[in-house]
Image (tube, rainbow, N blue to C red; front, side):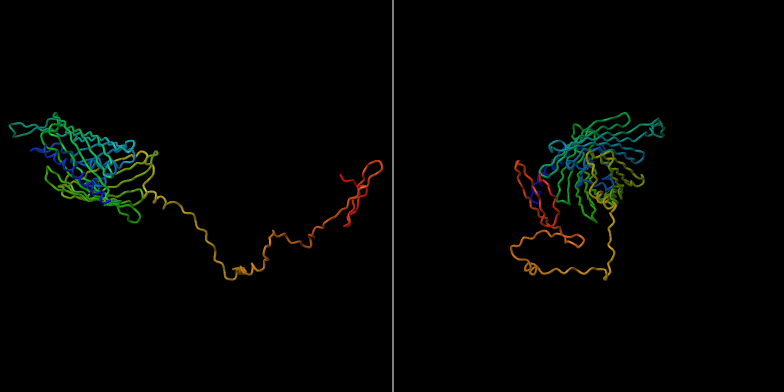
Length: 417
């Protein structure tokens, strides 16, 4: 496995270098465009301290690392509602499904952010005063298509995103790309790399640069008290802000169907501890998962994220849930035998040695089934003998006479037929 990993390192490096080169070649001066691309529209990874690059085993990989999208084993649908800062709301929907003949996984997503109504202020008296004049709205829209496949154990994925931004009466359209790779280092350890928000100069949204992010992450799966516990760590480099950030997260199964999550964001201006909870259950013949994340944002308050994921065809609960249900299943009572006193224990039968049994039996003797003993009330049946005498008459007829020498009365004239 180590040799295979080293053979794939050049491929991983080439993908990331290409992403960085393309991004830098179109980079220019100015502020960011599409700043909403920094917002994480997922619940599970948000609760884990904005970590997910190394895991990426469901639809949330669209946001963190499309290289892990190949791990989808059944069609999935994910819906999210986020209550963001200062009345900003975000709606998110994604759908992904494996293609036939193990030819990869394709997915679609749409993300819409709106600020709600913002009071409009107009300058009067040459800037010495302002007056309110109605309101305006800021909205951001992302519609994307994704593809991921597994090449000799190495997951490779790409997102193509159409961006639309509206500020009052001004709007713009652009295009961005995300690329990523994912590789299981062992059964317990997985790693991933991704480059996000790669923009092309002639399809740029606005005059600034997209917030180009490079991510690297690892996840370790450990067994603790027969339950799976995930430990995650991510490092993120924001090229526009020239900042290195990171995150730590842990997810553990506590009650069989309930997943508790805790994380910590490093290097963020409004970062800190994050937390969340997940609940999985079967309904209408399908697997459903509810997730909630709470992300503090300093003086701006808390950000709440709620998501619902349906996994079509995955009707069985995870192994840890099955185990918990088995533990709660009623166990048949064990019948106990009352203790037997010494006096009531029958003496063991004395079995003669095999040599004596063999000596008591003559050689070449055929053993027959034993017959029941004859008691006095049931005398042995007596064998009865009879003699039949025949006499031929002059007319040709024959007369038979039966004689019983053992004392049976004789019936004269009886004819045997």
